[in-house]
Image 1 (spheres, rainbow, N blue to C red):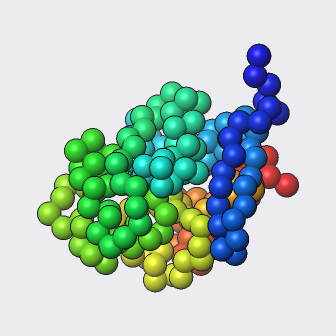
Image 2 (image 1 turned 90 degrees about the horizontal axis):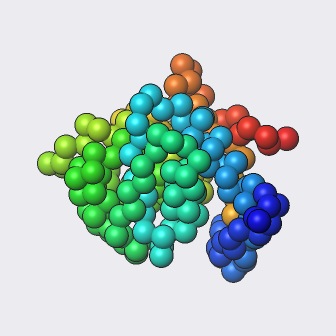
Length: 190
């Protein structure tokens, strides 16, 4: 029988240092991050979650797939993108439109690609309500641009070793706090 503290997955990363590292996560860590992260998202109704290919983006993809297992109102759409380059968001935007994705959890470069290179032009993304981004510092201008595309965007902070430890609230009435902060500690974070 699998126990909550048993090893679950090893994430490989170069993080912000550029030095390779490996981080072992336990079942409880992955399940709690997916569950409480979804509660912070505070969705109304069914969520269709779009994420990148796990061959490129293991952390967000695995977290999203676990979210479908622990949250009964989540369906996960995994897109075939597996590289970081200009225009790579075309495939993700196509999937968002085709599957009526309501939330997308993507790294900042993917959101920037959608906005800067116009891959959203001519697509019906009216189903897209929210999303998540993190892994690098975002200036207020970037957050403003992202929230124009995705009003319920959550900016999160964490590390390969700890997963998400803080996140802002998508419905925080003080917009400046959403623009200039990475938010409040996640549930069960001391």
